[in-house]
Length: 362
View 1: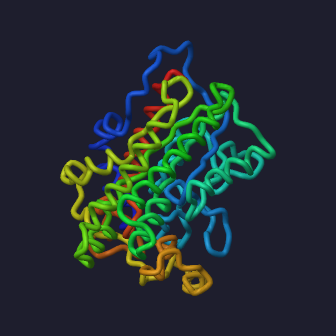
View 2: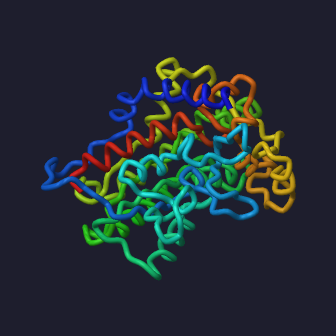
């Protein structure tokens, strides 16, 4: 228990030193009025997107409150500590006193609604919104967060790799997905009648350990640059499509935040920003003998990407399954696994999103 407390304390200190950088870099100018009559005080929050925003709801494959990234486990009791190493949306919710049923709340008291899910493409985020809209509506006191695109970019890259799309076609496909998500954000805001939206660009996957490995494995073109170009085109089309005047919608530039962290690793206390902290061959999720998730990490999961048979295994990543260099503190590694940024990026993105939600003229 002492080691766990020390690690968490060290992580908090490291992240605290870079708070000012995150709250300025991760924001983007929104235009429109910069004044407000009263502070924005949302009565609830709804989260749409992929696993970079998702909490496990308590199924066999996703323990309640679990994350696709760094999970904290109490080394004495073996219990999952959902509030530790929070996702960016958890930080936003907590800043407004809102709670998720998946993390400490109850179905009756929770006022933060989780709709984000593992593997969601833009089309599936649209389905998340449609399902929500079938029984509920967004209104001006609802804070909405949106982030997706990672899987659309990986799909476009996979199509290029398989030869079904050339480079330009793959980039165009990624851009089309960004346009679709931008239009969806506009529908959620509904010219002020809908929710108040904080949306984030997707991370630059060209900086990921996966991209670095792809560059080393192929000599046809620079695969790392292609993943950066795909990410950039998605984000470009997303930003150009959203009606981003600051009144109803606020942007957080998660891609630029990640780029800054890679260029200035010392600012964030990183010892490694090119490899994954999570050791996915270790399947023990927590400290109790009856909670080994080996059965979950099996062929029951459809392989999303043919080159990574354990693509979902990062759901079991915790302070018990980190690489030796990250064992003392998960904040010293930028990446959780080959494609997903880890706890330090999530924390900085959360700070930037909080600043955007509180400072926009909502």
